[in-house]
Image 1 (cartoon, one colour):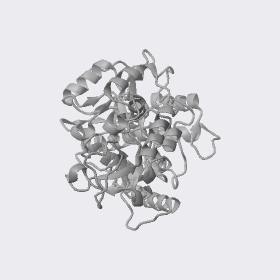
Image 2 (spheres, rainbow, N blue to C red):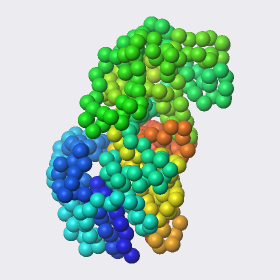
Image 3 (cartoon, rainbow, N blue to C red):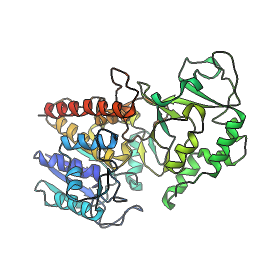
Image 4 (cartoon, rainbow, N blue to C red):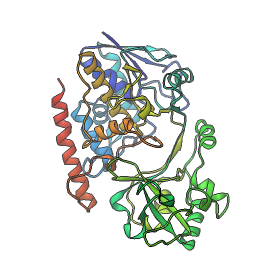
Length: 431
């Protein structure tokens, strides 16, 4: 049986290789080297933006490192390529970018069960396919995907930082919804006038990340960065996302300004800074948002990002096995699903391929549980949420431990040990 994989980036290459290794005939479609997206220039597959794109290596202190170890357990082509092209970089898994892309491309093109076809796919196949076309999916295919998904396709990624619940200072914040409605859905972080003024000034003066030309149109028309709002006037945030109206603590106290945190995971292990989508550099985000008293020692699980990133409203469109709800034989993988980052994209390619293979064998989906990073990302793309945004690997999305461990280093190590034990059980469950 032939399987189509559309897109030969990390997710598509992982999916094609996994399926081919199991004896399926794979047609891998990509527009390269005949055409390039604005972000690409190399004719090889799996082009990385920098040598450190794969990020941290240690599975016991870095969630992306843990995800890479899970991928190794599952037989990842990305990890094989990285080990063969690795360059010294301390605690990071850095690679020679050209050698990395060449290694993957050679593996793919030399595989007896993979046929590489240089062609733009304009429509979503009806069955037996993995779509892994990345954040710069071509216009025609984007339009068809959008139509199939009822318009549930986003063309920019404007997200706020996420912090770990255990790092929030609860002596300086309180639970509660505006006007007492809806229970305790939000954590409210009050600011005095002095603190608010300093915070607003810091937002305006902080250094911003560079925005590429192909990013600009969708971002700034679609979503207002918090630093841009602050620049419109000293009081602007108090009439927008930091408005204190309708918020009182248990003693009835009112406040000059309030930043709200909203639960990002069902377990409540991570919270989103409501309305704080930002284009500040990551170091600046930590410095500025840590000026809020309740977040003085906050552990940032994900920083805010703003760039073009074509992605599905996956909870509406996809199942946790990465299959399309309206066409169960079609699977999506990569950043288009709402995972953020090269490693996360590659992992989703493996998971989509596993479940397409299971389906073709007449078996039920097999999804890692949420004690693993792989399973937690799968749960994220399928989980109902008020404002779905892409997610990267972080310890905050994992199912919490049965016991509270306040020391971050010890907590991360315990989470990693549990994850690695369970991903091996998952691998062993695959026939």
